[in-house]
Length: 221
Ligand SMILES: *Cc1c(COP(=O)(O)O)cnc(C)c1O
Image 1 (cartoon, rainbow, N blue to C red):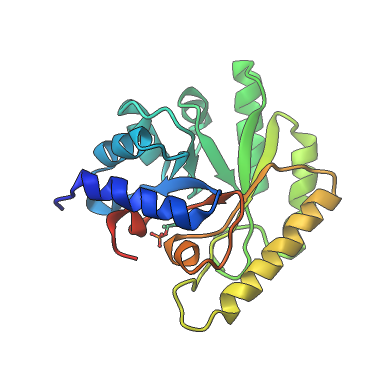
Image 2: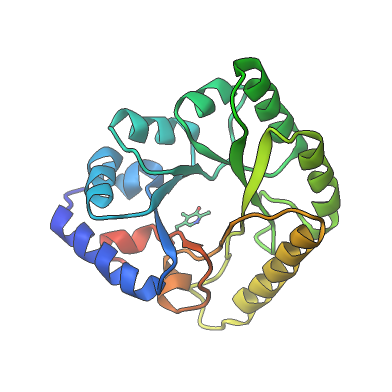
């Protein structure tokens, strides 16, 4: 698809105002929704975006190979055993199960690296991937056992932020709040939380430390 990079810059500035102080991680999954992730990424980085989010490890590595320096969050969680690549490309992995934490910890030990920050994905109603409330205590135990993996962020995905009725999103955000409080009560101190996609950001449904707009970068709110 043709894309006007000037429009992408303007859309970022519009989102910056809506974000009201939250950091903006531009979502460039699926080759930036077909617009070409390397060019879009470089444009956003020069325009002052705070970070990027992609679905797949390969998408993150493509952005690094294109010269992108800002943090890159890998949201999908399909790493296989490619933890060495996560470390080499200095990525910010999203995790949601014990095997991922253990695999990453072993890679960090093997490479004799400093601890690596990760974000934990919480399932608040999407029924896809993520830690459910009943599983939270167990996953926090796993983090305790592997201190090389530092729980620095908490995220969730809002299933229906673009629906007319905001009640489902409100319920998800309330559950997210409670789970974040449980994490802190368990003695962890993640520095960032994020939930909002484009629809949630533009409807001011939530403003946490980070927002994750994708489609709105291309002017299709
Ligand atoms: C795709 C995606 C986004 C961005 O969604 P838009 O509707 O394109 O803004 C944010 N978070 C996650 C987890 C996603 O998968």
